[in-house]
Amino acid sequence: MKQKTADISRAKLSALEVGGCVLLANKQERACLKLVDLWEKQPYIVVANKADVSVYTVQREHGGSERTVHWNLLAQCKLLPLDHQDPEFPVDQTNSGESK
Image (cartoon, rainbow, N blue to C red; front, side):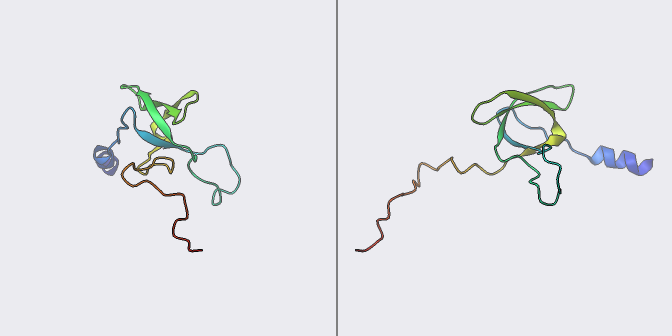
């Protein structure tokens, strides 16, 4: 019991910010868990959270219905999706390096 209280006191709840990008756990497919993606491919945006409980309301990044999920089904998305491009370094789509 002593160890349990020490572990609980050291545990930190990572608060997700409203407007932050998160990934939602993939609970749809239940086949062989080794081969299934653990997280959904499209990121979600945190719309709201309830202060008294660890529940967040999220919505897909490009629109869609809102879902209310527990915090243990969410993971912070620290990488930006590929459709976000840095305006300082535009990607040139032409093959200007080819010689004829």
